[in-house]
Amino acid sequence: MIGAVRQEIASSEPDQVVAVLRRNWLRLLLESHTGELEQLCLDAPDPRDPHILLIRACCRDLLGDSYGATFLRGQGMRVAPDDFVACFTDLLLAADGPAKAALADRARRALTQCGPDDDYPSALFLLGWTEVRLRRDFAGAIGLLRSAAEEARLHGHAETFRLAQSNLAFALTHAGLFTEAEKVLDALPTAPATSDWDRFEGGLREANRGSIAYWRGDFDEAVAQLDSIIVEGSPGSNFEALARLYLVMSLVAVGRTERYYAAAELLQGVSKSDKHGIPWDTLRRVASAWLAYAEGQAERALSIAAPALTHTGAAVAHALLAELYRRMGETTLAAQALRLASSTALPRYALVSTLVTSAALRATAGHGPHAHEQLDRALEAATPERLIAPFLAADSVIGDLLGAHVHRGSRHQELLHTILERRGRLSQLHTGILTRREKDVLACLRTTMTADEIATHLGMAYPTVKTHIRSIYRKLGVTTRRAAVHAAGARDAG
Image (cartoon, helix red, strand yellow):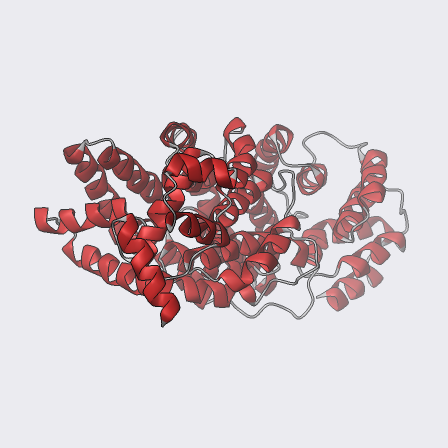
């Protein structure tokens, strides 16, 4: 396409060059001709034209020069506020947050007045792309991206079509519409070898497939997908960072202790501030807390997770955090995390997670009927997309609740049997894998020390010791201290 634009400029009158660039600048950016587009702007008869300066600002930003982009934008803002180029320049350059939301609304109005010199398919994609990152209306973003893909197809804009479909797959995944997302992912055209949009799109396909596999409880598949796009030592960003988070959660789910140290290193590379509408720091903290808990460092897990309870707008993170607190016996904190998770609209997979956690909390509190009611709601929500990960906790409370639910009878017997079969496989995988701190507690169990005395001896809180003892019993398949000591001795002798 860049060759055709060059020819059109060469055959146009000088006063028509800006119009040619206006017709094509968005598409050239999307098709990764950023450097060539900027050179065309510099070679224009009037490189100081406001529209030329605004287009150059977008080029600078995509090429990693944010300072140059800011200065050029400032020089170019000599046009009307509702000018099409100005609206979409602001949309591309603005940081996420309330300001970007207002700019998206302004760009939407500009799109309704799109003229013959404006690229409607590309602008429609950028508006949908922005709405995905703002995360304020996923249904609207999905609609915009579907429309953008169709417009791009009709106009023969292959790369815009691919980007629209790619972002549509992410929007569908985030919304919990996994089956539809997989269909879009399966049909995605091959991405170009190099793309200026890799800073936004790199690893999208594998990150989405990995996160879907995680929530469906296929943790080995999740690890395989996510491993393929993670580059150790690189700064985690966007989909690569998302892959790091889900990889850690998947490794914890299958007890891959030999990879925990490297997993902690990967989390250090995830952003500590929110970007592109994603609450990175909260997500990083929750994954880090889960990893610390899996390593037997319950007090450290509590310390890491604590700041996550002071932030809102991270429904998935808070759903996972609620389950972690429940697992640690911190019922008050679990309830607080559940309230945070439920303060905004939940995607289906996070909803299932909160319902399972709530059911387990009610069972622990002795409210059996309410627990089964919550569990049945969870199963109903999980069935359409086969969301079984929240039911797979290596935890006797959930295991007992599921077993009792089978005997009570349920409309979701098929899913229940799948869950119980998968739990059995995971249980075999986890059997006998004790963390370092669990081994310390087990050594104390061989003495006459009480749980209080063990806590003092090991410098732990009493509830943490009780959590470790429950975990040891579960992993050794026993229910008493004497049986745990006997099972551990038999295993060591073997």
